[in-house]
Image (tube, rainbow, N blue to C red; front, side):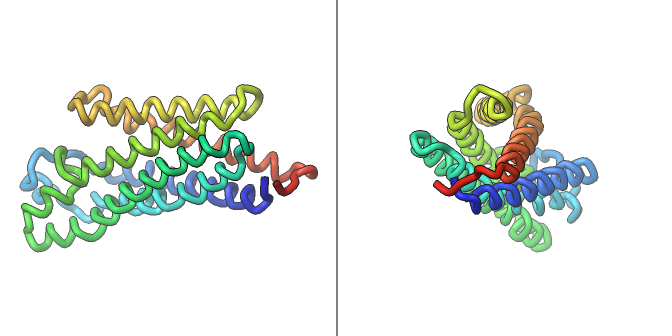
Length: 221
């Protein structure tokens, strides 16, 4: 394993943790809510509604270096599995990155111009919109990526805890995606619940990287 991959993983993990905490705080400060119609959204619109999209956008980007570091962390025989997971994570970054960029650009512009038809497509806070679908598709990809990456860890020690957190997030995230597809609010709530195992998984991975960085026997592979 390359030392640079560990260093990249530490930096990326810290960035992901900070951005996730910022996302939580902004959601608490300014809950976005859901709106059945475009008219409801326009009536309730405040610029603060879009605040959580700022850390979420950068979070979608920072997951790439984080998972690239995990690819190099994995042992050679498990690299194909890690590569498959990386493809799904890239799908998440693409879908969610585009979606959150739309929320920060197209949505406020269309509100200002009163373009209701465009808002019906681009606003992720309206169930059934293209943006809402894109957001859920992104997190479904991320969940599958987590399940693939869980296979690179062993069952012992800290790796065992990381493996468990990755699996729990993967299952809960996919449950939330199924809830969206089937319009089942109970299952859809898992999209928010899954944020906790996601954060735990990243923190545990950061701890593993810190352990490796202090290991004098760390060598290039």
